[in-house]
Length: 429
Image (tube, rainbow, N blue to C red; front, side, top):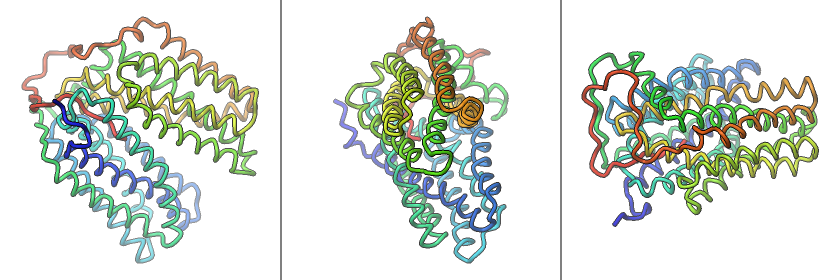
């Protein structure tokens, strides 16, 4: 008989490790641009922090997946935590003594992004050996709830600490990373490293995750439409709402309410997911999410009230979170253990690569056509995505737990074996 997750010692340790790391990361995510703005007075240099972070993540995401499949994952997670702790401690000391040079700030931003690209896939691989397959959906939902809670609380705490002293948010992040390192060190489960002949970062290794996703029609279609198309369009939708209901920057109340509702909807979805078994209804949830987003765009086009927009965005985000948990669960079921790092990083890469352009598109539509037509045109893009996931044969053919795609080239020599009891991995961030 499988013991409940609350009695799974290693799962609790990994859950706590992620909580400390994400909470600290959210505090510094707000504090870093504020620090640059305070030091330089330049909004351009403050914005460069975010640009460096996003660019570093996209560049290193696929190599990070390769590393997670090549190195023992618990050890790799500890190295990432120690590396992050080192650079954050250096920044804390610099700020405390009165001057943080811009190169050091950018180094911290880039290092955090790079290490996260390695750490995330490693978590997937280790969690596969920690949590039994039947508890996949529940564990995924709990990790998502943890992450969304940290994202709600972290910026508020970081802003308050920054007001007391600019060094405090970074000191708090360093403490969180230290606690995260201790939690990972106490995990008993090991994930055996995969040994393969050939160059570590060869083109074949870097593309292995994308190749695997492409050879399963359901995964390919849902990631391209729901991951890319919907992420892009929903980003444009929420940015349009933020701008339109902020009265051109004269008031932040309406736009702030909409963004708060988006965060609250994501948290509500993560808390609701374990009750409805999203892995058993992933396609229905994906279709429902797409059409709800279409309806939200239509409602916001004709009812220009922040309260209505906030409620519709919260509903969309709640459904999207539940659907994403179901899809991620299914993705992990069909992924061979020796490829889980590369497949996870490939899926994250596909889902993330268009996100920075959604707000840009929303702003362009709002400037060119006004709020009503911006919402309407965004709704048309959402409707096209909804039609594909509703009627495309590939989106209706869900893979079974035993489906595995064949590699595009010759079989990989010497794959690592799956540890006893290994079943699945759980996304946390």
